[in-house]
Structures are given as structure tokens and as C-alpha cells.
Image (cartoon, rainbow, N blue to C red; front, side, top):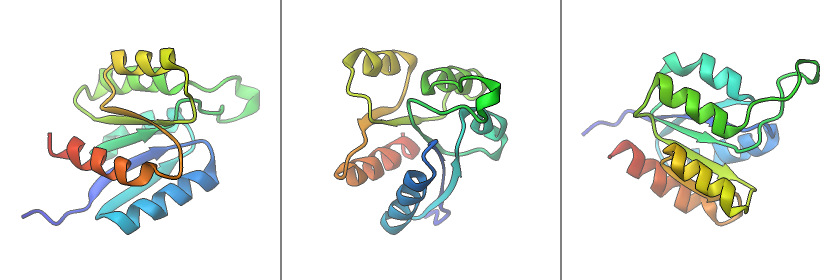
Length: 132
């Protein structure tokens, strides 16, 4: 049996939320988690070989001077170009069904809304993703 921690990237522009999510996940399983504030940084670090990426839909720009950041959908397209089998789970405040549909069509592993009850569902999705 492999006892190595599951390698996870959390890509979330809300630093406080990303730390809350990281701490909550660590309490629920054997996870090694790297948090990132931008999609660009995530794309630069794909060589760290995460097993799962948890990605926010709307990502703020790395610096307001640089203009708008890239959306989660744009990040997924680039991830799938570089690592087509890497599972990506979207965790978003968006309730627009068209946005969710766009993500499903892009090949995300799972899409869920941010809320207080999401943690068990998120852990289950992570475990499904690494065992697929």
C-alpha cells in the first residue's frame, strides 16, 4: 500500500480562503498541498507533478498593472495541453449553469460550488481522481 501523500495544487486568488481550504483538507487526509494565487504560477509549476489541481473560476491578475488575469477555463485549456490526464476540480462561487457547462465541456474532473458543506464532497472527488 502506498502511504505517500497525494500532491495537490490549490489555485485560489483569495489567500485566506486558500489557507482555510488547505488546513481543512490536511485534517481530512494524507495530502501535500501547494497553494498558488494565480493561474500563471500554476502553469509555471506543472513540472512539480501534482496529482490533482483544485482551481477557482475567477482568478485575479498577478499585478493590476499587468491587466486582467486568466480565468480558470483558460488555465484548464493550458493544463490539458501540457498534461492531458491531470484531473482538475473547479471550486467556484459561480452558480451560472453556462459557466459550469463550459467547464464540463473543457474536460474538468469535477465542478462544485464553494460553500460550507463542500469539504467531504471535495475529498471524495480528490480520492476518485487519483484512483481513476
